[in-house]
Image: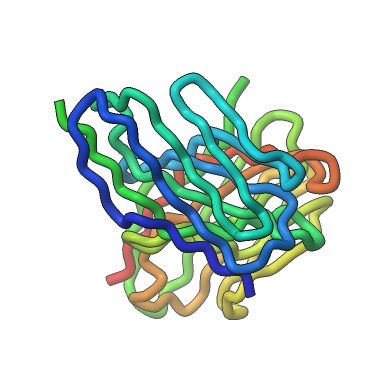
Length: 113
Length: 114
């Protein structure tokens, strides 16, 4: 059974700091891994999607890496801003029929101005 | 272009009652998935509908059932509500899962069971 773990559970940093969020998964048989952002009480916004054959993806100040064999991914946020404050969720799509996602519990990020 | 929409936004029910939640997928999408997100947890997959049939199901009891209509909209029904069913219910839409990895999530329905 695929399980996804995110560390740390919560993080508070001053504005401008670079930071790394970690995600690990137990089964390397995945099609892809995604990072989502969720604002309080809201739906999910996709940030980055990494296919299983890729090592990393970049979008603006965000960079996500994937090491499928070791079951790890990191989300790097450069020059953090107060507007980055949200919950960040990691999800894998198992290599099986359908496209269900298996999520971690998330990292709550607070960027202080 | 409207994204994924869900109704209602909030709902309060009592134990033992039944509830129906609704989802309209993004224009052009034919696959709808439902997730339950308890407070402080990540979303958990309930089931997925494609071509009006349940295509994939997570580890949820039969009290949770669904339907997809010819226009691809979907309903999630929960019978005999328990306190533990209180959660944010998220709908996600996509193209045929064999063709696309991108899923778009709606804003969710907040269900409170008293």
